[in-house]
Length: 113
Image 1 (tube, rainbow, N blue to C red):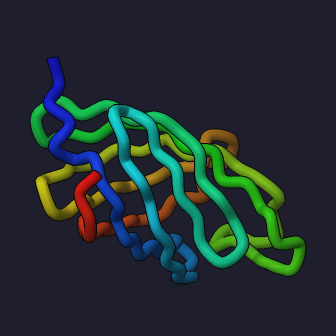
Image 2 (spheres, helix red, strand yellow; image 1 turned 90 degrees about the vertical axis):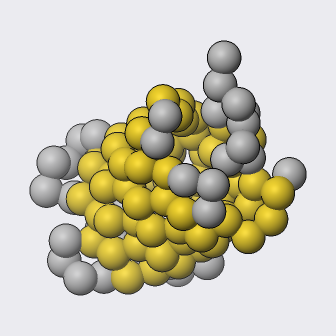
Image 3 (cartoon, rainbow, N blue to C red; image 1 turned 60 degrees about the vertical axis):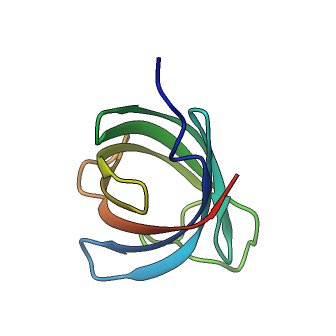
């Protein structure tokens, strides 16, 4: 049984392979991932095995004037693969429908839930 010590509010920074950057927030709670940034919100699920993190997140535009790090896209899904500790995460995220679209995500835990 997984202990949910990773539950909390996280700040994230991300960059695409095309050198576009962004930042946002995530809430991790018992396998559920929710968050957002200035123009997109995130909704997904994750699993943690030891320090390995795997998951999938849908990224959906709510501000029609915002552009993602992958360009002018309304929504996309990402597979997440990386590592997590009590205070940091490092993830590589790949677009499910376009293997050329990848990003690196780093995060810092800010609050416990």
